[in-house]
Image 1 (cartoon, rainbow, N blue to C red):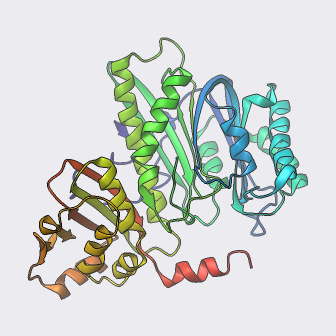
Image 2: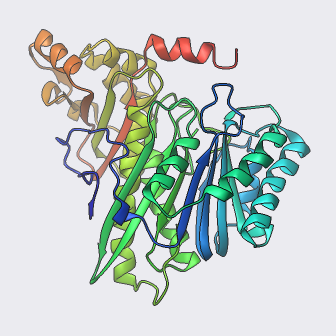
Image 3: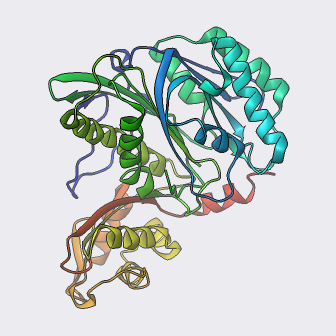
Length: 417
């Protein structure tokens, strides 16, 4: 893959680099137009309505939250994917339209109705996403005007793409975007993707929203399988606060025409799509509310991949591990004990641990190390690597999480007030 950001690597020594808006016009897939406008949902006056329109019906797939409390937009979009007839995605930020009863579903449907009228398609060919405060009805007067304004401004440009990405933000400090050219056998295609999310992050699917666009020719079945696979090893392996949102939605839209990918090409495409998804997922963690560090956790030697993921998720979610990283404290006991209660098979006598490349625990026992030097190294690095070997099995996963700071507590204690 060639693109505007470095492709992620499986090497455990790689450091994380947060990059955003490093996109190029030539990497945008053809057949899509974009807009982002301010319609008045957010009291701040920042952009809060995004519109993506395809020039013709395109293939679309989706992966959605597994939370049993599900927002109206998720119910609607989930029922419309996979499909080969999608024409647009409309997204509002600042209001999640979740836990809003029948009125919430009526409002989500009306958003699609208005877009369909503007685009010239059926309402069923429009997808919708929402993000923001839970439990409040949408200000539909604002949204009606915003959709019409956005439709007047849609353009197939990088500027339009970035405005669209800007308008889906809530507490995000930065836009999260990736564009890339990908090689699939002898053919080359493009991918452009955007995401939002900084808090309420522990995706299980797939408060993150993401839309990935490509001109690779896919069938609905290909798109769904590729997206589900990409989500499993990217968005499903990040955490900020362990809270799975009511609105998590990940979409893939393909404008590609011609002969669909053959099995070999499809395998390559899914690998490249996963790399783009990992880049976006890492950006979510690095932008975690109040975060000072990314915890890049690698579990090795577990009984299988599922066990490794269970251990990684448990370590990543531990407030004691998170706060130790915040304080640059190489407290191996917190990490090792988290693996012990993760409800996965481990070999205690085989456990070893490295933090930032320094071995501090080996074969079930602590080893001498320069604690002040390691603490200084942890403090100086935006990414703190944690490599935990729990046995001699084949299970290995990588997982990313943020640390836990007082800024996170202060921000979220005042979120709705």
